[in-house]
Image 1 (cartoon, rainbow, N blue to C red):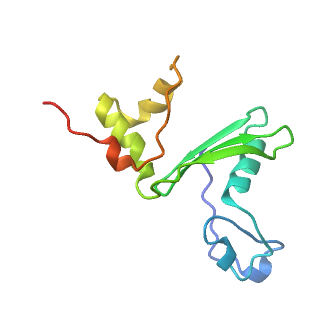
Image 2: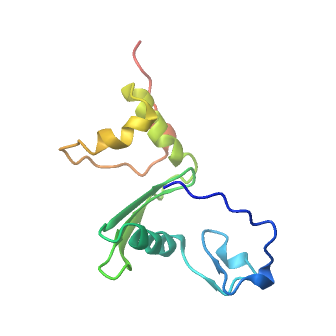
Length: 133
């Protein structure tokens, strides 16, 4: 979903009716009225954006998370990697490179899978092995 460009440089904290902080730094935002976990935030967003969907996966450079959204939009379950925070967003780039597939095609290609494979939560750097030429 493409988000609209919104100019926010004119906004002031005192203009905000309610401020929620999230993510790893949520506890250090002194002006937030409430802070919630990133997992809860993603879950609520997924419940709104995909009212019929029940799953949410998030991949980024710090970590990867999979969230199962409950019937009422609550976090029913979640998993995340725990071995290496750095570089996990690079994992899909490494997979695409190894398969000689453009990165943009990895998602659609993954939906054609017919077999479940275990997913390693170790550092993505170990996913790149020595290749034969």
